[in-house]
Amino acid sequence: MKMRLTMQATEPEAYKAMFGLEKYLSTSKLSAAHKHLIKVRASQLNKCAYCINMHTQEARKDGETEQRLYLLSAWRETSLFTPDEKALLALTEEVTFIGRAGVSDATYQQAAALFDEHYLAQAIMAMVVINAWNRIAISTELPLA
Image 1: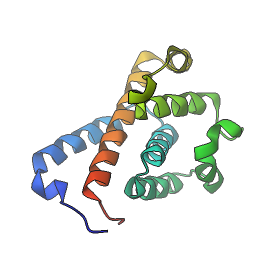
Image 2 (image 1 turned 30 degrees about the horizontal axis):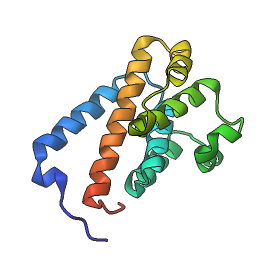
Image 3 (image 1 turned 90 degrees about the horizontal axis):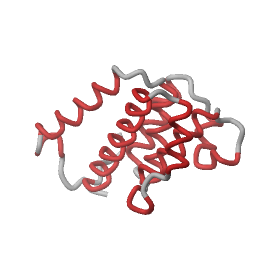
Image 4 (image 1 turned 90 degrees about the vertical axis):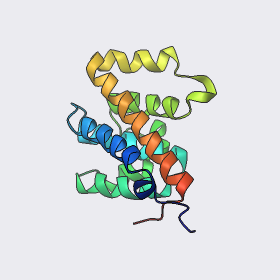
């Protein structure tokens, strides 16, 4: 697979803006585990090999277990994930596939019951940002690093 273009070189200001969002997320109250689960799960759903590769490596470096990473695509069928993680994973799936049916009231309310508004807003921003990165990587055929 040959990379189509290098977004960072072609549109450096756009890339700079995306990194601005990443900088914002790095200062958020989101736990490292929550950020990793959001990034990996959205990347799995979008079938973004580049991001799955990068974010699973980052998650492992931060202490995420191999078992949880292996079972992330089947998170509903295991007890390895906490209720707050399951709420974020459900929301991540609906935000990622927002064009199908939006975000259901049930999924939103489940997350809202577990997190304050600021944490929930930061989580939604993390979901939006990783989906944007997935789209950049997939459309430009960004090769694995």
